[in-house]
Image 1 (cartoon, one colour):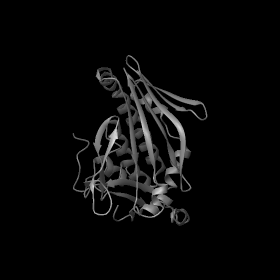
Image 2: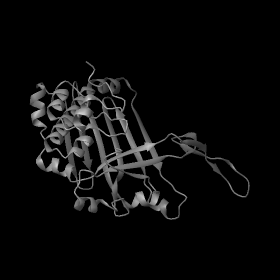
Image 3: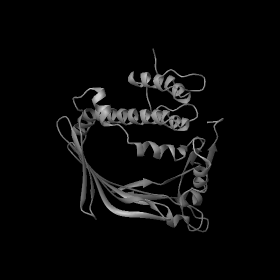
Image 4: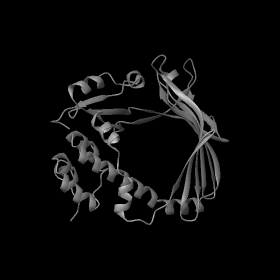
Length: 285
């Protein structure tokens, strides 16, 4: 039986069981490998559908299997990644990127950064200075992300140079059965309630109408195609347009009190950039 077969609305059996609130059906499907991250035709995952049912046990079950499946997929790819790193040539590269806007003052709050990337053997390091966005200001810092490959495992480290703190995680498949790993990933009641008391939000980039155009430079009718020298190479400069960041929100599982708190919750950056937002009701989710 194909547990990922979809119905006319793009729903897998797990999606359907979750939407209808059939806890035991969902449990059986998950034990047989049904994908929690699969999206239906409307773009909602199994976990997001579980939250909309307001069923605490169902949300807890979906959260636990989502974390389990994420961990297994990530760790299963470590040997392949190590082999590719071993074969790839060592290098150092700087990647500069920035967002701009024709709207006055907006460009000043748009993000930009220069990534510095080192690769040596099975080791990889990325340096960045852009940490996040808070109160109309992009938060800057000095962070390094380091991947250190070993024979059959790897160590991932996040280094905060300003605070002189290192966060480290060992990536390796443990020799335990499924139930043992799942037991270790049991979400707390606070995590589940946090999901049930917050709106369900899905964000995606709509690039159906994306267009690329060579950037030009010059004044008074004299225009030429813009180029930049990157690491000793002359590179053409292109601009991308017609890309939309769409945020869709569902609130049917919230009380009227909590729905009121979510209104006007668009971030300052979303307001400035005119990000499309769709509020979805229970009948068209």
